[in-house]
Every structure is written in C-alpha cells, then in structure tokens.
Image (cartoon, rainbow, N blue to C red; front, side, top):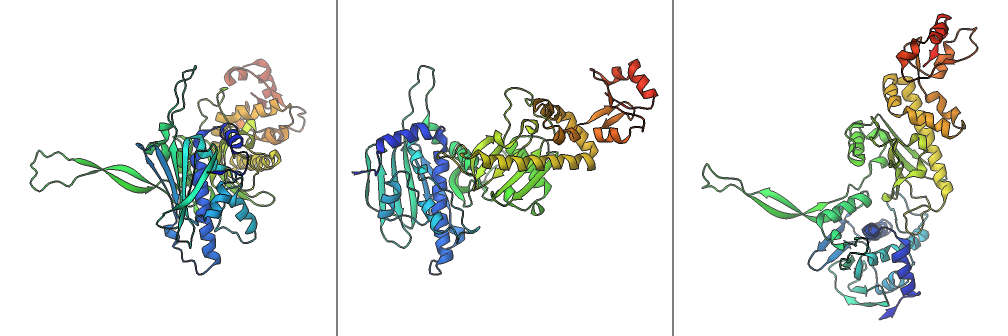
Length: 475
C-alpha cells in the first residue's frame, strides 16, 4: 500500500464533502479527463508522423453493471505509464492536463481542447464510489498498469492487462444510505440505470468533442413467420445497440451563416422546453482579452412564472463545451431576465470545483457585452419589425420599465428608447422619440395620463382638452 503524497485522508475528506456540492458531477469530471486523454493522443499524432491514428476510432465508452454496482468510463486515448499513474493519481491536485497545456501552449490550436485544470476532478469519483480501479496502458507500451484505492489511506499500483492503449476507470458505487431524521437519503442506485447515465451525459457533457458511447436497450419487431396465419400478431424483441449519446458539436460554435433558423429554433425549444419559436436569435463570437461564444434567445412569449419570486434568471455557462452552471445569473441584468441562452468560454477563471467563477471582473466584462448585444437587437426589432416588437413589449415591457425604476434612473439612457406608450392621438404604440418628433413647435412638455384603462383615460375631459389643442397624450 502506497501513501498519497499529501495528507490524503484530510484532503480527500475535504474534497468529497466541501469542494463539490453536487455528487452527480463525478461523471462530468471523469468524462472530461477521458476527453483530455484522447486529445493528448490526437495532439501527439499531429506532431509525430509515426503515430498512425484513425480519427473516427477515437471515442469514450460508458457502461454499468447493476449487479456488481460498477460504472466504467473507458477511453482509447494516450493512457498512462506506472510513473504517470503515480504522479497524476498518487499526488492529489497534480494536473497532468494543466501540465500538458503549459508545455504545449504555443502549439495548440482548434485541434486540441484540454479541459482539466486542477487535478482534483478524478477524486470526485469518491463522492459516489467506495472503491476506484484505474486500468491504463500508455500508447506505445505493451504492459498495462492498475491503480486501486478506497480513497482513505492510500493506493496500490500493479501490472495488469488491457487490449489496447487507453484507460478504464471502474467505480464500485457506495451502498444506498439509510433515511436520516428528515426522511432523506442518498440513493446511489440512480447512477446504475441507462436513463440516469444518459441524462447526466446529455446535461453536462453533451458537447464534448469526442463520441461518448453506451450500449442502450432498444426494441424491434421480429420477422413475420412464413407460416403465420391472418390472425398473427406482431412480436417484439429487446436488443442492445452501441449508441452515441452526446451531440459533440455545439450549435453556438458554428457560424451563424452556416446554421438555418429552424435549427436554432429546434435547439431553443428542446433546450429551454418552450413550445413556441423564439422571437429573436442573437449569435456572436467575441475575441480579445476574453474569448467566448454566445447564443441568446428572446422568447416568443413570457414564461408563466416570469414575475414570480421563484423565477430564476441566467444563461447556461460552459467552459470548453462542458456545462459549468445551468443558470449563471451574473450574466444578465434583471431587466433582461427573460433572455435565455448559452455562453461558452475557456478563458473564464473557475474555482477548484468548476461550479462557480473566481474572478468576477471577467464575468462583468462578458455580461456588459451580452447586455449591449441584447439592447442593439431589441432596437433593431423596434425599428424594422414593429409588429413583432409590440408583441415583445406586451410580454416583457414591464421588466424594462422596472429596470429604470430599480436603478433610480441610472439605466434610463439605455432603456428609455425601448419603452412604448399608447398615443391617444395616433391610436398606436409609440416611443418617446416618436412623440417628441410629432410635437408642435409651441409644445413645451410631454403630456401623459395614468390609469387602468386606455379607453377610460381617453374620455377624461383633461385629456380631451389637450388633444383639442393639437397635443398628443401618452396613456
């Protein structure tokens, strides 16, 4: 038994109970590690002509055994030698991926996208596993090596067997916990189902650049027997088939000129669970100090709970195509809380758990650019598609007004031009700029009346008096 290179028991206990708050992210971390291993081999093939590699064969495989209570994450990446197992897994918080990024920083391009940073993601496995076994065979070596640990005192490294280069991470899941005083208990069995694993892959790792494959259960109709009679009823059989679970290429990474609006609409409806197409789609790529992609949607109708205290605003935040936060509320101001979408940046500084950001100024810079883009797009809709904008304002105008109120007028310059008011004279919705443009030369003020009904306001003697003088009244 070898001891970890740090105070293992204390550090692992700290990690498992403090660093990560959500146990289900263990699969995200292990798949990210597998993706890095495949990326390293891919990079080696680009640098070394002697490395013959079929890009179509690169993949990550996830499987489970309900009876043995195991989950296996396999890759056919670069693998690890016994020394690398010792260095990467025996030293907590040592990141082989971060080391690789540093050494090859100038040579990396779009062909390589290393995800790992902190060297602790692997140990998130111990949040759900009582025992972890790693079988790895380095590219170019004939012998595999096996690293095993219960995450408590230490680990062992021995020789083993693996048919080809790559790594298998085999988790033996903990037993389900007993009910506590509140009647709650952690159920690890939820990770031992086809649906449970597929949903986690699609939630957190859907856009990892390599195929994530699983054997899935399907059903098909059996061939009709030749001697079957007219009363024959079709029979079905279950079978297993290897299926790619993830989408791989995120739609926000594609040029907007290469994506049809119907594809954006389909992504919006499936991702944000809306029946209607979005009113507007905003896609842009930013470069400079921070590089990121953003895909934003203005919904076609207001969510039923938009103005309730339970409504959560925010954009999905990805880093290198891996979901970090499902709703990052710092990316949107309150008055644009209705906007849905995705921001993906490999440059944001994440904390060690990757669940929150460390440097708020980076987030502020992205949020400022996102806000400007939304404002510019709404102005374009207002000027070039007035009917659609009036429908938008009917749904979300209250939030824009509240943005001016809640900022004590500081946001008036940005938001005032987006507001619409009912013109008693024109009998339609107009902006303040349009009202001012239509004012007679002798008019020195803007006239308005507030009430619960346009029709009732229009009948007020004072409103009629102003209209008779040739001035407009905003109701």
